[in-house]
Image (cartoon, rainbow, N blue to C red; front, side):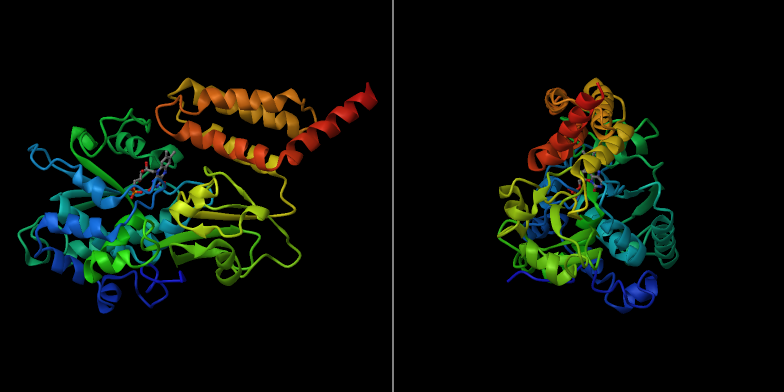
Length: 426
Ligand SMILES: Cc1cc2nc3c(=O)[nH]c(=O)nc-3n(C[C@H](O)[C@H](O)[C@H](O)COP(=O)(O)O)c2cc1C
């Protein structure tokens, strides 16, 4: 039976875990020592065996992504840890960077050896001043001890890790926007293909992996890919961090085995709903995934397949719990404001359409809505989704369309009340 597990968060409450001595005292940097004696391709195989899927949102198998990197181009290979973490409701990578930065570094080291990369980056969200400081300090400790730089851990392998703080743009979490930003350009996504694995940073093969994905590697290499694959479900292996917010008794970051029943998670880990609160909706994977109504949660498990079968996505694991007091029109307006503000402006449907949707929602919320406004939103959305360079356009329309579909009364009720009022005053 799936349950609470600690692979990533095991030591976060231990004294001094964020320091090199604290990390090493609890077995840190053993996996990389072992890995440096392995064939790099063997490391890729081990990660494939683990079934680890990217924790940044798309759930793409990590080992498979690594196997797309060409090894014979004569160009350097770059690895970028993606710590941009700007999806509303998501704050799990922050905990790893703040509490266990050496775990993140060891994860990067393992990926670096597997892909024979000598220069790696961590792109940290601009607003994450303290997590960045912790990570930066940990990198400095590694250089002082000879764990980074020339000949790491006494081997002949050179490795540099460069911490880089973004300027606070959600779109720079999208891997090609990130690469552009890191290159010193505007953080605007590129068309794919070519994929970064082939043409990435400075035109060289590049792997972008989420912080949590890379932080899972030390355990996988210490215990073996098969041991990891035994945790979770057949297709959703291992553990996953969920950042829980909203009307629950115990919001926070939880690590659970994939496949954990959603309602059990809500009750047993999150402490259940606040007193007097009635569950209205769950947004399980960050703001860009569809919501589930309270009556749709029976039998739903927290894994990629079960959530998809229920009509939503696991996404980044930003688990938002909304109670009966939440007006989904307000929630849609809130997210529409966020997305229209964060559009990079490169594609017209997203740049213009996002603002239009926000304005229409504002009109409805302010009591001036018309029934046809809902059709207008749907029509506009059909011209945004799938018509942009990156999936930001789809992320923008998903919450709005999902809340209209799942909670029509919150939208039509407001419109009808406005129309009744206008009939009376005219
Ligand atoms: C608009 C947008 C924002 C994203 N933000 C993040 C982010 O903050 N962190 C992240 O790891 N991935 C983010 N992603 C996904 C990345 O593009 C990429 O798939 C991911 O970093 C790959 O790592 P993984 O395979 O380990 O999941 C975002 C994608 C989109 C479309």
